[in-house]
Length: 239
Image 1 (cartoon, one colour):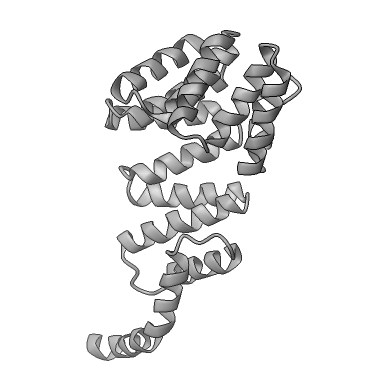
Image 2 (spheres, rainbow, N blue to C red; image 1 turned 60 degrees about the vertical axis):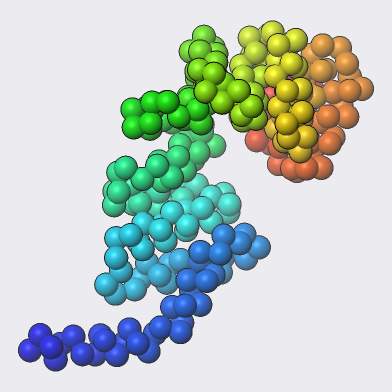
């Protein structure tokens, strides 16, 4: 009886193989030009019979990525939650969940989640940088500065951490130090849009309106959403 009951499923799997290959290619391509098609392909994968946990984990994280690009943050968070339920040690899924928390202003949840990663990887400069940024978002400036300094001690040329520490100094009204960190970040990566944008804001605070406006304009050309991304932190060109 067991063999007879499995026989139709076997032929179903064989018949579906070409379509499955198409879904795999679309879902896992990472392309964001047609997000609806990408989400549909990942969803089709998740509906397959006998899907392995590893394959389900991958499809959930990928679909979450597409939902995030659609600004469907609740759906993205649901996918990342499901992925972490499959493998609580998956670093990528936890990192992505932190990103959702930060984007939606749930900074305490982000700090708690990043604490899990810090216990798993205590000497990872990128995780320390995450902690720096989240503390800064919470206006916990001393903790933020300590985490950024620890991160830069491990990776002195990390653009993202120089960018984060620049933001910390900006919030501490230490504009000259902020400018120095943004200059250092942009010397390494001249196309880093967030550093360029906030350097522009910093220059304006130092009285250099022409230079500040030029940086802000250039940052907007690189990333049209850069100004919007800083609005939740109360940071705009005017201030």
